[in-house]
Amino acid sequence: MHNLEKLISEWRKSAATNVSAETLDELETHLRETTEQLVRSGMNLPDDFQRALDDLGDMPKIASEFRKLDEPLWLPVKLAIGVTALLALILTVFVIARLDSSRSSLLLAAHTFTVTLGYTLTLLIGGLGICFVSQRCVEDFSTSRLHSLARASLVLGSVALFLTTLGVLLAMVWAKIEWGRYWAWDSKEIGGLSVVFWLACYLVAHRLFKRSERGVLASGSTKQRLM
Amino acid sequence: MKLEKELVAASSVPLILSILSEGDSYGYAIIQRVKDLSSGKIEWTDGMLYPVLHWLEDRRMVRSRWEKADSGRKRKYYSIQPAGRQTLREQKEQWMAVTSTLNQIWKPQHA
Image 1: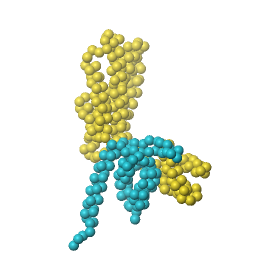
Image 2: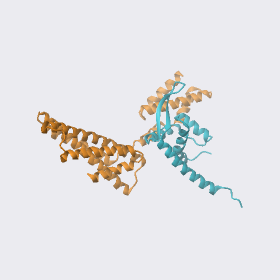
Image 3: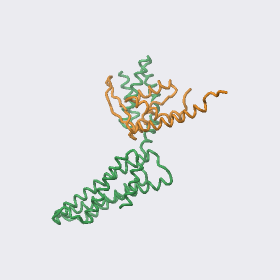
Image 4: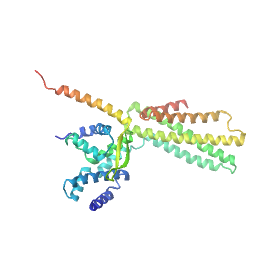
């Protein structure tokens, strides 16, 4: 079997750039099984291995099938990510420029940064929902596009929930220092809490309707209307 | 007689899900099972099975795990999930409808 190891190693080197390491491991197992089966039938190893390779098929073709699984991001999702990254950059510059060294100023700056990004992401998820419903009036989405879209909205929703929750918590600490209490039930606090609550509901809906990406994305547009 | 490429492609998902509904399996064994069941009429390019398995896994119809076989070799086993069983039920109904329609058209005519 020493020669088989050499043949496999050479095959791995030539195929490594086409697919992920895990997929390569899986295909290697397949090649070994096929080769060993052929060896048992009495042929010689190099020929057996070549036949196993022929049965496996062209690596570029297999790799191209795997690439089809990676659906490219939908344009509105790319835009949402771009807008968030740009806003994060602008906010960073803005916050640093206005920062002084006091503890409460740092807290307020961090609160402004996180909560603004969290709210913006929440609005963008709603925007994605609207884009989704609008496009569906014209043409349907492929299953893989739906899947990639649902995954993107889940990631964006999770990041939005994390940032908004952090922003609200930072505001509470700031309020304790400045006003002597954590919570005052003012409109901004209630607004922030509502967004946190809504995002939590959105993620629960994602979990409940994970087999129905359409329902989840449509709930994004409902949220936009509610906001 | 070999089946046409389009028909082989269309039947790949119900075939894989049906085999996995009998029990967990891995790529090589799935291909052998298909060859045995179809008496060699359905011929897949071995490597093309794996993108389909990964596609099914991506859609949570199957789940995979690496396991050491008795031979000491590590194999990636696939098991069917509730979403896969649901898809299999739906596909079964559709294929049965097609089969039954064709059978009615092609049944021997009794004059």
